[in-house]
Structure formats: C-alpha cells, structure tokens
Length: 312
Image 1 (cartoon, one colour):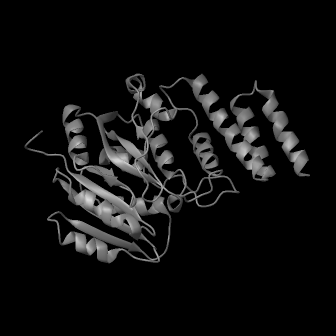
Image 2 (cartoon, helix red, strand yellow; image 1 turned 120 degrees about the horizontal axis):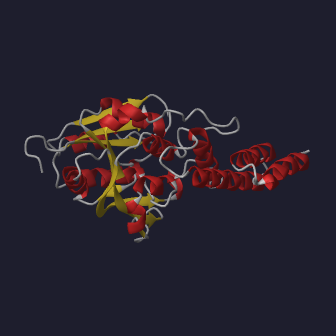
Image 3 (spheres, helix red, strand yellow; image 1 turned 90 degrees about the vertical axis):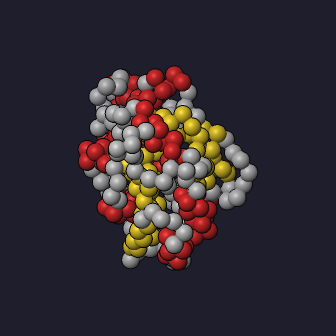
C-alpha cells in the first residue's frame, strides 16, 4: 500500500425508517480493520430519527462522523446525493442502512485499488440474507468468464451488484454527474423513481462513462432482502429497470445487436408485468418500445395494438 497517499473512503449511508438495523450496520463500520474512513449518514425524513444512534457511534470512534437530516422524505437517490455533497475523501464506499460489512471490507477494497491504480469502480461479492433476521442465504460471486469482459457483464446483468458492495472514485462521479441524475425522466405512469432502480441508473452511467471496473475477489458484504426494504411492488421493479435502459440507450464498446436484443427483452418483460397488473396503456407503450428496438419483431407492435384494443 502506498504509504505516502493511503486510500481513504467516505462511507455514505442513507437512512429511511432504518432504525431496526442501523446499530448492526454501524457496528460493522466500527469493526473495519482499515482505519482510513469517514462516515456520512443522511436521515431522509424518517418518522423515527436515528440521530441518537449516530451520535453515540461518533463517541466510540476517532474518525469523522457527519449526520445530516432531510426535513422530509426525498427518496434514496437524493439522500445519496446529500451524502456525496458532504463526503471529503477520494473514494466513496456505499452502505445501505440494513446491510453490514465483514471487518475486512474496506481493507480488501483498498488492496484492490493499490494493485490496480487505474480503477475507478470496485466491487466485492455479497451474501444474500433472506428475511429480517433469517439464516444465511445465497453467496453471489461473479463468474471468471464474466470478469474477463467486466464492463459488458455489468451491463447485461451477468455480474450482480448491490450498492453496499461497491465503491467509486470522485473522479468518476465528475463524469457521471449526481447520483440522482435522470431519476425524474421516467414514463408518465411511474412515480418514486428516486427510490427504484436508482442504483442501476447510476451503474449504467458508469458503464457509459467507460469506468475502469474491478472486483476485490472477496465476499465481504451481507445484503438483507426483506419486505421493509422494498420501495415498489415486485411487478414495478422490471418496469423501472427497463425504463432506465431505454433512456440511456446503446453504449459504445458493447455489441449493438446484443444491446438492442437485451433492451427489447427488458421492455417485453415490463410490458407483461404491466399487462398482468391491468395497466394496459402502459403495457402497450412498452410493447411498442420493444418493437422500436427490434423492428423485425413485428409481433410486438401487434401486441401493443391488441393491448390497447383490449383496454377499450
């Protein structure tokens, strides 16, 4: 590790109604073997604020701790932006309020940065915990073949990423723009874009910015999947994801044909979910967009028309 300029992280935690898990999350930060970090916690209009937990934590550590409170719930994308505005270190390490790290998480990220100095975006593997306090779930690792073409694997969702797993440099953020960029550019029938797939929106912009990406090679994150963490219905998740892929369009350096096929597939998946929910106008719109991405698949245009006629 470079003794002149050691890697330092701004650990950014957005919190909304997260008191139940935050103690364990903060404890995992305190337990880090890598001491080069500061903490920024942004309270996003919770009904049960966590200021007392953060202040108690700050008395237990020597690192800088910043607490910021929004006057109302703006959504996680804007909470992350507020955290980034208060971050002062070269690297940003994200951590959601209901996840927690292994003690060597930051150390493994720092070691990866030292090995590959040109990296701008690094990620670890994670363990998925199902339920509020459920037992161990599935360990998620990238496949070796996907790491060989890491940028396209991230784009095509072959490499799974969660916010608590990755860190990125401030120089990359200068190219991608604020975390919340584009979250309001969604179809008319969707709301709450600042809460759904906002991480995928940012990741797509990192791919678009030709971010140099790398894997730590370690499993150091515990990701909780539980009902309280869901911000939209399960059927809406694919809709937001499809919307962001459509919005950002094709990206250089990746097969255009495969991108068009993939984006069209996402539009069809979203259309089917919307149709199942009875939102026929929206379903027709997504079938139409799927056809636009693959005009030879004329059946999708036919489906769009049929859905509209069925609605009437």
